[in-house]
Image (cartoon, rainbow, N blue to C red; front, side):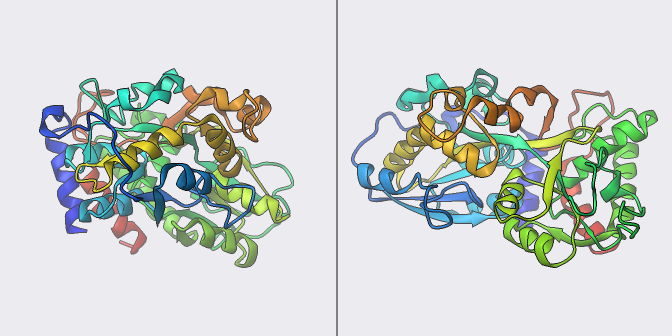
Amino acid sequence: MKKLLQSCTALTLALSVSASAFAQVTSIGESEGQVNIVAWAGYIERGETMKEFDWVTKFEEASGCKVNVKTANTSDEMVALMNEGGFDLVTASGDASLRLIAGKRVQPVNIDLVPSWSTVDERLKNAPWHTVDGVHYGVPYMWGPNVLMYNTNVFKEAPDSWNVVFEPMDLPDGKPNAGRVQAYDGPIHVADAALYLMTHKPDLGIKSPYELNEDQYKAALDLLREQRKLVGRYWHDAFIQIDDFKNEGVVASGSWPFQVNLLKSDKQPVASVFPKEGVTGWADTTMMHVDAANPNCAYKWMEHSLASNLQADLSVWFGANPSVPAACTDGRGMQTAEGCTTNGFDNFEQVRFWTTPTSKCASQNDACVPYYRWVSDYVGVIGGR
């Protein structure tokens, strides 16, 4: 936690890092024999969960690079692991990527060494969560929404609002929601509360759920404290949440399409929806550690990660959207144009993507509450304070 707070504090001081501060790879040499990656659950599959989803085995055979994966359940865990070192790559979401850049934990990516860069979605190439002062610090991987997952036996009709997880009420089955809903175990969940307030308390004047002045931030924390009375468990492990929906009576929660897809494949009564207040979301970037021990294998993996068949299959597996648009239509993988539409590929502008809050606000004149406060205060919320 100390390292995390130091990283967050550094981010509030400076978000502009000169590329000259890092040694950038200028050519790719012989494979070192391995690449060590910190990744979200389900992001790097070798057929062990379901045999048809495997984009590791052939890469290892062709490159000579054994892929070692460390699963992280939150962005804060990713930052902590990268601070400790020993990894080459990380699939960082927007609430981690700028912290990693400001903390000098990742290095610029030489896009000339990534031939498939030209195939990346134009909406992602210069995204502010991995591009600083025109310098790219990663290769886009996958993006998607944080959906409201619900039990279809309890909700015969899809709920249209996040109120089912934020406010006390009886659900359509006549039973209270208290103890049967979940919330995300990460400080970035403050943004979900802020997004909800943008619709339900417009007088607060929130323009961005990641840019909150003191009054707006207090209102978000107050809402989260009320939510605390309803939450049966705060989730961060996707597989534990899946078990909770199967066996522990959980009927509604913010979630990722990954959990929705796995539960549906197991014939569980779940579905998901974009509520009327909108959704937050994540756009994940493969970033390279500043002290990567295996840079050649790392670059080979980054190029491999943009192959449209990998992007297509991961899109189907995770229920997310590829960073390479051709993956939706070229037929090299499992994904289709209809599948991408279902995953929200056309709704990019409607997703409020995770980013790291700082004291500098573009949406208002007041100073905003920086992320290190989100970290400490959310720990207090979960602890009942």
